[in-house]
Image (cartoon, rainbow, N blue to C red; front, side, top):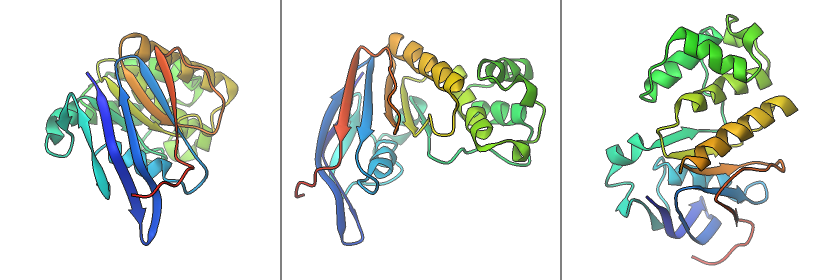
Length: 211
């Protein structure tokens, strides 16, 4: 099981964000995508999810191009973007149930409660999501990870943003447990965190090579 990128190049308008990006990840690996604002971190994550195409290069999963084997790749992927992806008109626990179900991991109301409890949201589980703070909404979104142990590849865009110290520690433990089971994680963050990865890699997009 590998995630491999070869010679990736990203261009937005007339500006090159990054080029010549190469890496190979194996089970247990965690890769942090770093770089200055505007260097293309989110753009790279969207490419790795198959949501956008590189200007040059290709990405493979299990040796197969992710854009020509979309269904197989989607079954093995959990992507949480920079936006929370929660519905304001739903109660917090309902968001957890619906998001988990849409990801192919149906859960019960009780399981949703337990996931929110682990993230310190017991008191907010029955509240409308629109009434929650940004940090609480982020934790509702992150609760999906509690049910994704069988999804090998997690791609997480700024998962620690707006979380307090306790929630960051809980999320780090969840990610570390996933890595210990042989999962892979690609993530961005502006925080200094420690994960129990078999191999921790940093990919810095700040440099600007030519396509």
